[in-house]
Amino acid sequence: MKRPKVLLADDHCVVAEGLRGLLKPHFDVVGVVSDGRELLSAAEKLRPDVIVLYFSRRLLNGIDAARRIRSTNKHVKLVFLTMHREAAYAARAIEAGGTGFVLKHSAPAELVTAVREALNGGTYITPQVAGELLTAMRKGNGAATPPGELTQRQREVLQLVAEGRSAKEIASVLKISRRTAEFHKARLMETLELHTTAELVQYAIRTGVSSV
Image (cartoon, rainbow, N blue to C red; front, side):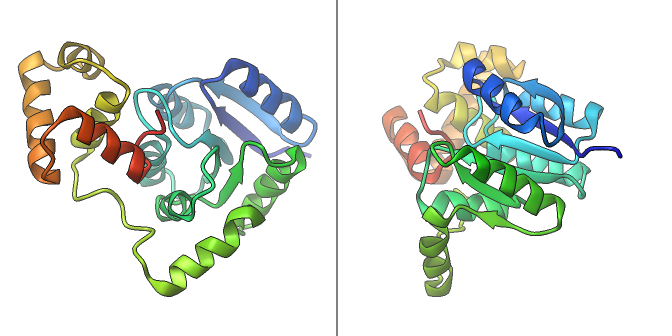
């Protein structure tokens, strides 16, 4: 009998290998990737049934990667693995198409349960977050509201700014000119009504665009 295919995305090598060992007895682990751009390529090439992804990725974070993957593959299941236990993070994961939300320090068996639940068409939210998430959703306090009305490019620039990248480094990563990178950063600050790089970083962390 053919086993479900699982793709792992985590930039911590030791953690990724541990996850592979955990999932391998139950699923066909078809690959392990270490950044968001590699994840997009692997998802297209390997066509996994489930992707287990860490919430904040290098170069392209988990939320943006999830949205882009779901735009081209409506059937893949996305299980988020994160250190963040705030309901806002879980809400954003679900809003981006996630069907699972598990904390990194949860019992290992919980991730297996989340993947199985996703394959069965359900949604698994770790009990440590589920109650707070339900309360937030009932109150309608905006926990699921994504950060601003930003373009894809602006979100990428914001992520890189939060990682401490200079305009030159941002230009190199995104394969654009330094002047264009500076333009996107300026428009980003204007859109968010922020005035310094420090405020941009704080905004990125607060809204879950980055966890640095």
